Image 1 (cartoon, rainbow, N blue to C red):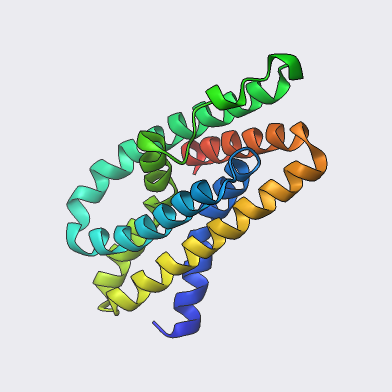
Image 2 (cartoon, rainbow, N blue to C red):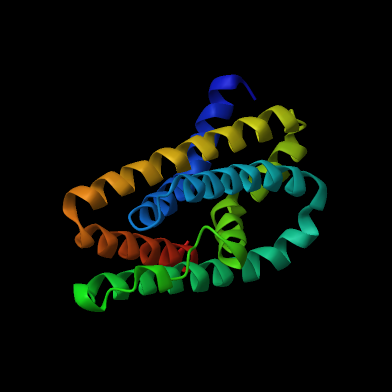
Length: 183
Protein backbone atom coordinates (compact mmCIF):
# COMPACT_ATOMS: atom_id res chain seq x y z
CA UNK A 1 0.00 0.00 0.00
CA UNK A 2 1.37 3.40 -0.87
CA UNK A 3 1.71 6.17 1.68
CA UNK A 4 -1.39 8.10 0.54
CA UNK A 5 -3.56 4.99 0.64
CA UNK A 6 -2.20 4.03 4.04
CA UNK A 7 -2.86 7.54 5.36
CA UNK A 8 -6.43 7.54 4.04
CA UNK A 9 -7.08 4.14 5.65
CA UNK A 10 -5.62 5.48 8.90
CA UNK A 11 -7.92 8.53 8.80
CA UNK A 12 -10.94 6.34 8.07
CA UNK A 13 -10.05 4.05 11.00
CA UNK A 14 -9.45 7.07 13.24
CA UNK A 15 -12.95 8.47 12.73
CA UNK A 16 -14.43 6.40 15.58
CA UNK A 17 -11.57 7.48 17.84
CA UNK A 18 -12.20 11.10 16.82
CA UNK A 19 -15.92 10.90 17.60
CA UNK A 20 -15.37 9.21 20.95
CA UNK A 21 -12.54 11.63 21.79
CA UNK A 22 -14.79 14.57 21.08
CA UNK A 23 -17.56 13.17 23.26
CA UNK A 24 -15.19 12.40 26.12
CA UNK A 25 -13.42 15.76 25.71
CA UNK A 26 -16.62 17.66 26.49
CA UNK A 27 -16.31 16.44 30.06
CA UNK A 28 -12.78 15.15 30.64
CA UNK A 29 -9.96 17.22 29.20
CA UNK A 30 -7.18 17.55 31.76
CA UNK A 31 -3.75 17.12 30.13
CA UNK A 32 -3.31 13.72 31.76
CA UNK A 33 -6.71 12.55 30.49
CA UNK A 34 -6.00 13.79 26.96
CA UNK A 35 -2.66 11.98 26.99
CA UNK A 36 -4.12 8.73 28.33
CA UNK A 37 -6.97 8.53 25.85
CA UNK A 38 -4.88 9.65 22.86
CA UNK A 39 -2.01 7.32 23.71
CA UNK A 40 -4.22 4.29 24.29
CA UNK A 41 -6.36 4.86 21.20
CA UNK A 42 -3.18 5.20 19.13
CA UNK A 43 -1.62 2.13 20.76
CA UNK A 44 -4.67 -0.04 20.20
CA UNK A 45 -5.05 1.22 16.62
CA UNK A 46 -1.42 0.13 16.11
CA UNK A 47 -1.82 -3.25 17.84
CA UNK A 48 -5.08 -4.37 16.24
CA UNK A 49 -3.73 -4.64 12.66
CA UNK A 50 -0.74 -6.56 14.04
CA UNK A 51 -3.05 -8.93 15.92
CA UNK A 52 -5.31 -9.25 12.88
CA UNK A 53 -2.30 -10.14 10.75
CA UNK A 54 -1.51 -13.09 13.01
CA UNK A 55 -4.99 -14.25 14.02
CA UNK A 56 -6.24 -15.52 10.71
CA UNK A 57 -9.77 -15.90 9.43
CA UNK A 58 -11.13 -18.47 11.95
CA UNK A 59 -10.82 -16.39 15.11
CA UNK A 60 -12.27 -13.30 13.47
CA UNK A 61 -15.73 -14.88 13.25
CA UNK A 62 -15.88 -15.36 17.01
CA UNK A 63 -14.57 -11.88 17.76
CA UNK A 64 -16.82 -10.27 15.15
CA UNK A 65 -19.87 -11.87 16.80
CA UNK A 66 -19.28 -10.44 20.32
CA UNK A 67 -17.19 -7.29 19.79
CA UNK A 68 -20.11 -5.10 18.61
CA UNK A 69 -22.14 -5.99 21.72
CA UNK A 70 -19.27 -5.20 24.08
CA UNK A 71 -18.57 -1.92 22.27
CA UNK A 72 -22.28 -1.04 22.31
CA UNK A 73 -22.69 -1.71 26.03
CA UNK A 74 -19.67 0.31 27.08
CA UNK A 75 -20.27 3.31 24.80
CA UNK A 76 -23.98 3.37 25.59
CA UNK A 77 -23.34 3.26 29.34
CA UNK A 78 -20.76 6.04 29.28
CA UNK A 79 -22.84 8.16 26.90
CA UNK A 80 -26.02 7.72 28.95
CA UNK A 81 -24.15 8.55 32.16
CA UNK A 82 -22.67 11.71 30.60
CA UNK A 83 -26.06 12.77 29.27
CA UNK A 84 -27.77 12.09 32.58
CA UNK A 85 -25.13 14.00 34.54
CA UNK A 86 -25.37 16.97 32.16
CA UNK A 87 -29.13 17.25 32.68
CA UNK A 88 -28.95 17.38 36.48
CA UNK A 89 -29.45 20.78 38.07
CA UNK A 90 -26.12 22.56 38.71
CA UNK A 91 -26.48 22.41 42.51
CA UNK A 92 -26.58 18.61 42.37
CA UNK A 93 -23.57 18.50 40.03
CA UNK A 94 -21.11 15.89 41.25
CA UNK A 95 -18.66 15.97 38.35
CA UNK A 96 -15.89 14.36 40.36
CA UNK A 97 -18.03 11.29 41.07
CA UNK A 98 -18.66 10.53 37.38
CA UNK A 99 -16.70 7.58 35.99
CA UNK A 100 -13.59 8.82 34.19
CA UNK A 101 -13.52 6.96 30.85
CA UNK A 102 -9.81 7.71 30.48
CA UNK A 103 -8.90 5.32 33.31
CA UNK A 104 -9.04 1.62 34.08
CA UNK A 105 -11.35 -0.87 32.43
CA UNK A 106 -13.35 1.86 30.65
CA UNK A 107 -10.18 3.06 28.93
CA UNK A 108 -9.29 -0.44 27.76
CA UNK A 109 -12.80 -1.16 26.50
CA UNK A 110 -13.06 2.19 24.69
CA UNK A 111 -9.66 1.51 23.11
CA UNK A 112 -10.80 -1.92 21.93
CA UNK A 113 -14.18 -0.64 20.76
CA UNK A 114 -12.67 2.11 18.62
CA UNK A 115 -10.02 -0.14 17.08
CA UNK A 116 -11.96 -3.30 16.16
CA UNK A 117 -12.07 -2.22 12.49
CA UNK A 118 -8.27 -2.11 12.45
CA UNK A 119 -8.26 -5.85 13.19
CA UNK A 120 -9.95 -6.49 9.86
CA UNK A 121 -7.51 -4.19 8.11
CA UNK A 122 -4.65 -6.23 9.55
CA UNK A 123 -6.17 -9.42 8.17
CA UNK A 124 -6.59 -7.74 4.79
CA UNK A 125 -2.99 -6.54 4.81
CA UNK A 126 -1.82 -10.05 5.58
CA UNK A 127 -3.86 -11.58 2.79
CA UNK A 128 -2.58 -8.98 0.29
CA UNK A 129 1.02 -9.36 1.49
CA UNK A 130 1.32 -5.66 2.29
CA UNK A 131 3.78 -4.04 4.69
CA UNK A 132 2.27 -4.55 8.13
CA UNK A 133 4.42 -2.46 10.44
CA UNK A 134 4.53 0.72 8.38
CA UNK A 135 0.74 0.60 8.02
CA UNK A 136 0.21 -0.19 11.71
CA UNK A 137 2.52 2.65 12.81
CA UNK A 138 0.76 5.12 10.51
CA UNK A 139 -2.67 3.99 11.73
CA UNK A 140 -1.60 4.34 15.39
CA UNK A 141 -0.06 7.81 14.98
CA UNK A 142 -3.06 9.14 13.05
CA UNK A 143 -5.53 7.77 15.64
CA UNK A 144 -3.51 9.31 18.47
CA UNK A 145 -3.43 12.71 16.75
CA UNK A 146 -7.12 12.59 15.83
CA UNK A 147 -8.09 11.70 19.41
CA UNK A 148 -5.99 14.52 20.83
CA UNK A 149 -7.53 17.05 18.42
CA UNK A 150 -11.04 15.75 19.10
CA UNK A 151 -10.68 16.01 22.87
CA UNK A 152 -9.41 19.58 22.58
CA UNK A 153 -12.25 20.47 20.20
CA UNK A 154 -14.84 18.82 22.46
CA UNK A 155 -13.46 20.76 25.42
CA UNK A 156 -13.53 24.08 23.55
CA UNK A 157 -17.11 23.50 22.45
CA UNK A 158 -18.03 22.57 26.01
CA UNK A 159 -16.47 25.80 27.32
CA UNK A 160 -18.40 27.82 24.76
CA UNK A 161 -21.76 26.07 24.98
CA UNK A 162 -21.56 24.75 28.53
CA UNK A 163 -23.43 21.71 29.72
CA UNK A 164 -25.33 21.39 26.44
CA UNK A 165 -22.12 20.09 24.85
CA UNK A 166 -21.88 17.42 27.55
CA UNK A 167 -25.35 16.29 26.51
CA UNK A 168 -24.25 16.31 22.86
CA UNK A 169 -21.10 14.38 23.82
CA UNK A 170 -23.22 11.74 25.56
CA UNK A 171 -25.51 11.52 22.53
CA UNK A 172 -22.49 11.12 20.24
CA UNK A 173 -21.29 8.16 22.31
CA UNK A 174 -24.77 6.61 22.28
CA UNK A 175 -24.95 7.12 18.52
CA UNK A 176 -21.62 5.36 18.01
CA UNK A 177 -22.81 2.55 20.30
CA UNK A 178 -25.91 2.04 18.16
CA UNK A 179 -23.74 2.13 15.01
CA UNK A 180 -21.80 -0.87 16.32
CA UNK A 181 -25.01 -2.91 16.44
CA UNK A 182 -26.42 -1.69 13.12
CA UNK A 183 -23.22 -1.93 11.07
